Each structure stands twice: as structure tokens, then as C-alpha cells.
Length: 250
Image 1 (cartoon, rainbow, N blue to C red):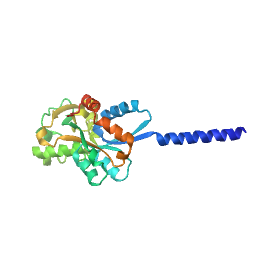
Image 2: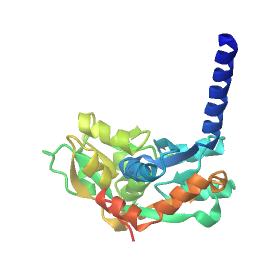
Image 3: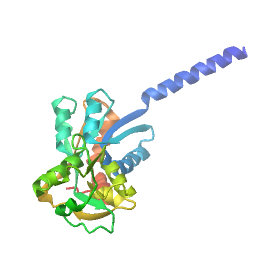
Image 4: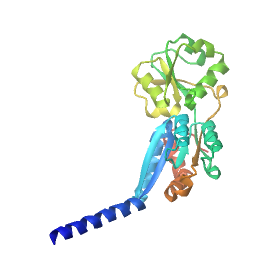
């Protein structure tokens, strides 16, 4: 009798757990690495009023994230650090086009050893190692390359560049002193830098404006929790959190 009761209780518990997992909400975020702290705060804010929701976060280079989504990775919301990779998902019919919106803006800076006498792009020619994100997948790297070309120093820097997988790895190289400096976003230098300091801000006329587009994916548009969190991302609450973390919002 005890054995039968034990089996029955085990079965009921298993069924309950399965049912709970089916009804528990899950939101998969694929977000540019530079937004990590802001998105962590926003997801925590949402989770406090929606305790049954679980967030799965994937932070990285925008191009790498877009390719992962293209290859079938489960994603509900994509936030890129440039418009190019959002357009890429759109061209693959993987984004919910009507949800595409601008999340925030940023600016590009050069951060490095505080004692260095570097105050403009042309000063980079006298340095030995400069970190940038790989331009093929990291928008910060693309912005930096555009600035080099506009300033006419691109050929002079070819042998000095150290490529990183994302903007946070760039900053890590600079913090460790493995490079003279790195091109990162203002918010990265303000929030995550330990040793590197901002040496100069890249003039806006040298590169396209750093823009973060966001969208639900096609799968995310069918996820009620993802759609509800997306509403929060468009809200005044989100704008306040973004401003606190140094981002520019309209």
C-alpha cells in the first residue's frame, strides 16, 4: 500500500512539475554586449512584477547574434548596435517588422592608458597596438573603421589593429594594458572600465550615429511574455534606466 501511495505521489509531483514548466514564461534576449547592464536592470524590473517569467540572455557582437538567430537559436527579442544587422534579420524574414523601433543611441570613444598624450584620431599613428571589434560582426569596429577612413589614417593603422570578438573584449584588452587603447562606446568606458580612461570622443562627423534598433523576432511576436516585456522596453521606465546607464534616448 505504501509503495502504491509513493508511486501515486511521485506521479502527481511529476505531472505538477511538467505543468508548471509548460506555463512558466520564458523570454530569450539576444542583445548587443554594450547594453548588458541596462538590460539586466530592465529584466530584473520586469521579473519583480512577473515572478513566473525566466530570462535567457545572450550578450555579444550584433553580427554574431544575428547569425545565431538565422541558424535557429531560440530568440524572442533582438537588439543590435547598428541598423545593418537588424536589416539583415529583416531580409531573412526573421524579425517581426512592425515591431522594429529605435531603443537608444551611443557615441564612440577611445579609451586607454591614462598617462598617454592622445587627444585625436591622428595621434593614433604613434601608438603600437589598438583594439577594435572585428568589423565583420562588431558594429563598434565598423564605426571605428569608418572614422579611420574619414580621417585618412586607415592605411597607417593596418598593422596596429588588434581585433576583438565584441566591444567588451576590446575594453578588457585596454584595461589589462595589452593594447595602448581601444575603441568602445561611451557607456562601456563609464560603466565597465577598471583602468582605462576615456582619452577622446570621436567626432560624430567621422562615423554613422551609433543606433540601437530593437525588434521582436517572428517567434517572439507569438510569445505573450516577450511581447509584454517589449512594451516595457518602449516605456518611460526603460528610457529612465537607459539614461542612468549613460545612453542617449529621445
